[in-house]
Length: 282
Picture 1 (cartoon, rainbow, N blue to C red):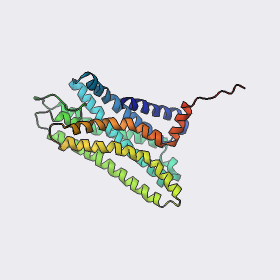
Picture 2 (spheres, helix red, strand yellow; picture 1 turned 120 degrees about the vertical axis):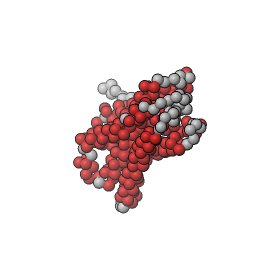
Picture 3 (spheres, rainbow, N blue to C red; picture 1 turned 135 degrees about the vertical axis):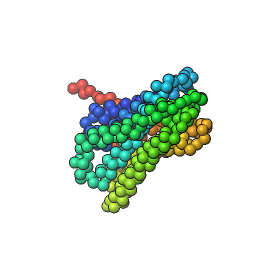
């Protein structure tokens, strides 16, 4: 999965950067998603492999806090990018004639900047909140990466502030973003139903298939992992550990495959690069 994540997202970024026909808002947002997935993979999976292959389970407190920031900040950014992609599909299907004038490169850049600022702003407090707590008991995390609440559960001080803030951020990002995505797709469905032909309805639906699959792979394990972290028993069961790993493994590895299979323009550009060109001897 690490290989799939790095190679797949790297190929997507290369294609979108080099092929001018992919310089469209939809693919700019896809490039943002690929970059976020790449950072998430590079900040977590090498340590996972070191744990599984070499038993290198030790990590310094500063490295743990740094990893915590990258995991939560870029997970929040990924959620924001999925919201932006839902907005892109909404404009493309519900207001296609104004698509190019609404989602200009400047607007896309502003949306990307807002996604970054929101992700960093909401999660930058996690490492400092965890760092201020006393840890006088076990220093062993049952997971393969430094998730905020997994670290906080090791503390022997008052963790009320950490619990409340983490819960508030989870509600704001998870419930808020999912509610917005659900609203945009509700409007998309209402618009598609009124299309005059079944061919137009099928074409509009096919443009959303990849995005819906990515949403399910991201929010599904994410919600289950968050619920089990917040409300589960203090000891980690095998199910909790597996879910926590899948939350970081699945989206970065599967997102480029989903978009590569479902998006015609990406398939065509990839085949054009991979297909050897014949030289006319004349």
